[in-house]
Image (cartoon, rainbow, N blue to C red):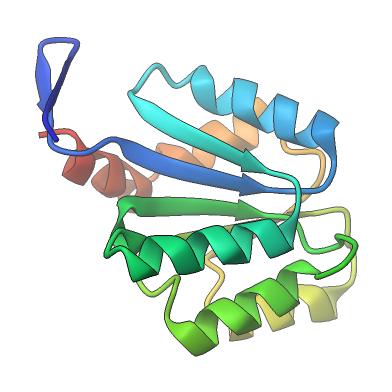
Amino acid sequence: MVLKCSNRIMREIFKIWLVDDDPVDLFITRKMIASWQIPVQIEAISDPIEALASLGEAAAHGQADLLQLLFLDINMPGMNGFELLERCQAKNYLQHVTVIVLSSSHHPEDCKKAQHFGVQHFFQKPLTLDKLQGLLLSPPYLKLVHQSVQ
């Protein structure tokens, strides 16, 4: 698929998933990301079981690589973020996805556990625009966006 956006040709849209059971956090994070003014597709999912099913479906249809960035809460009912990461890791669903944890947890062991699963960043809530922009304007994330915008 080729889209024209701001006089640039898009080969694919920079795709971001937000997985968090708190609708307020989903709303705020979505608004902050939208303020980047780059073409992104944001999928907000409040149920980690639904997120796992969607990742499995995308993988089954050869579309798992369309997701570039995942913001993930840890403390969720039904399945916590670590359980989601464990299941995704077992099936290689997030092999090429940058994972950023947003959590209310202040426990150092949660940060270590996240690193074990290959999480690139662990932020304590609330996420601020300054934190988000500082992260996303760093070279690794600018490279992700640049690879999507060609």
